[in-house]
Image (tube, rainbow, N blue to C red; front, side, top):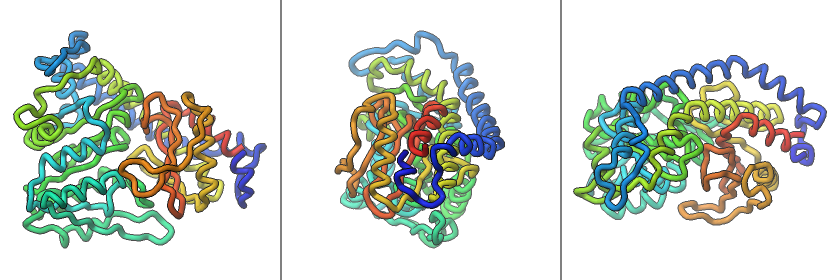
Length: 415
């Protein structure tokens, strides 16, 4: 209905919807098979970690107060460390968001006089206040501008990295997902190339990857290709749609410990913290995650195809490698953007009677509109979309626990 109201050349009508879906699924058959293979690899990885670490019902219990001797908490950390192929991990409900986990890594590992370089241009909006705070602590910040590619999404200027590194450089920050930018998200192969360049310059530079939105979308993680530390949110990929809060950090033991001391306090680090009866949910969500992400990736591939076929620029393309759970759609129309968000909200399982409107949110420079009738507030592994209210009005469509839900919502937009 919304597309029909727009009356744009090339848009589909009601009678064409079923044909369009059949066409898109036929076109995506081989890509969907590839996504099934990715799911199998990641499921095997998760199950092997559960088996090796001998998860038992005793790990579902919890303790109170300081959280000393919490068997479940220690077991979860071990399992995440194995999955990420790292020395250590800290997984806690106390992380408010992925941004919070990133902040702990920055402030835990950096000291006054250190230099931080963002590899893929300007980072996500919510990191801007953190970078300002780092500057106030005497930490030098630089970023390598993206390479503009005309009508195509910009991309990280990997060839320029060597020219930005110096003896003061302590950490390079690699944001895997596109954030609120019209750029290509970084594949694991590209992250590997970046890390190799950095380590060839100075092996002691910390390579830190913001893994938010990216876990289990490919068959490897950043730490499999040399990242020293990585982090993400449990209300995104690895929570499997059921974990109500939290995040994780994984990597080399000393860096994980330094970040954990920023989360709690020096001397406590990862050794304290009550899990608030969430250990079973975290483990179960992790077990669900490979399949849930498979459903998401199929959904955003379908979304990409349908919008592209209707005349809009999309990133990534329908059958391109998906390295995060987001597809961005350039709409060039504020009213249309708001109408799509209303349609997503109206066809959500929760709060479908509410109407999303643009507003100011903590950490964002522009007004933002967010649609997501999700079981968990802010859960971007569930079907949702959002956008900063600024030209060219790019919609960021993400998540979808069930592929059928994505098809249903698209039918309401395009029929």
